[in-house]
Length: 185
Ligand code: GDP
Ligand code: MG
Image 1 (spheres, rainbow, N blue to C red):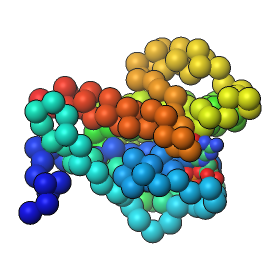
Image 2 (image 1 turned 45 degrees about the vertical axis):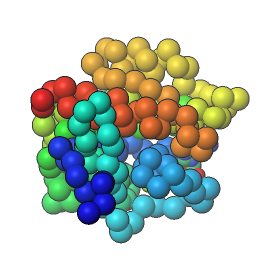
Image 3 (image 1 turned 135 degrees about the horizontal axis):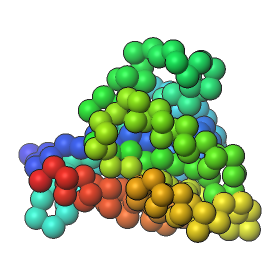
């Protein structure tokens, strides 16, 4: 049996945030160490997994990507729900709420994503606010402090990442998994 078949916990973590912020690339960087320069709407695969070894336990992270949920959300009224978002959030114990540090609008929508998350997910879910595309420093429109303050006010964890150059992608997932483990253990 492959060693990654042995684990103590399976944690479902969802990726949320506007289209184009880099959710699918954060996921592919974490699960396959791959980056894709083409921007494509995510279709098909619902989640990817990666097994991580932390201290003396092993966690299988099942990470869900939106599969076009952002678009769905954009075109429907906030009060109408299809089974698809329900399925997406069901059983999630962690969430990465991603924005693009070079696009302030994607940061401004964070509160709406939080509302959607807490409308559907367990109130004890561990949430990290993630400012992605940290490599685009010259195009930055969201100062680090702004993201950090927002996260602090709402009791979220916070990290800036780059799926392009790998900065903090691993750390972001690991911190969230450790925080989830602390809650359930
Ligand atoms: P999603 O719609 O949130 O899933 O975003 P994608 O992962 O599809 O990424 C959207 C676009 O942003 C693609 O062209 C990616 O190559 C690009 N991208 C994703 N992450 C980064 C990053 O960390 N830095 C830079 N410079 N571009 C990124
Ligand atoms: Mg995507």
